[in-house]
Image (cartoon, helix red, strand yellow):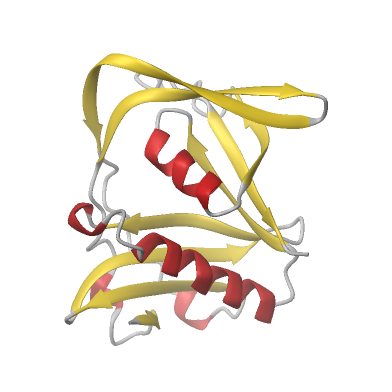
Length: 174
């Protein structure tokens, strides 16, 4: 069951914030006005986890922002956070699925909810950013019909421990 975040269920925010295994990186290539990519496999893997974020209270009231939770048996196992972007797209700021529920359709259901929300708001599509080292996320977005729109080599350059490139993905409505 997917429900929108409200004042009464905000305590579920961050419950699905598990880390992910870094096993390689996506290597994008732009040729003939089309993005493709290959994958580089690392010899050693590691876990990357982001800190829990402060609950975005304004996402309850603002009509151009939303958080949706995915529940299974009264447990929040996934969430997606969306907002209006200046370019007419709905921006997926965050999507998270608890580790034990990945590859079971939860993320795809959340993407479908985001598409429905964005179409209701008259956005032209969805966009998001992820890192080249989040190979499983990149595969997930490609599987769900997102295409690479650009690469940002500077987004993480101010963090000495981040050896990452930002990949911007788009899902344009027809």
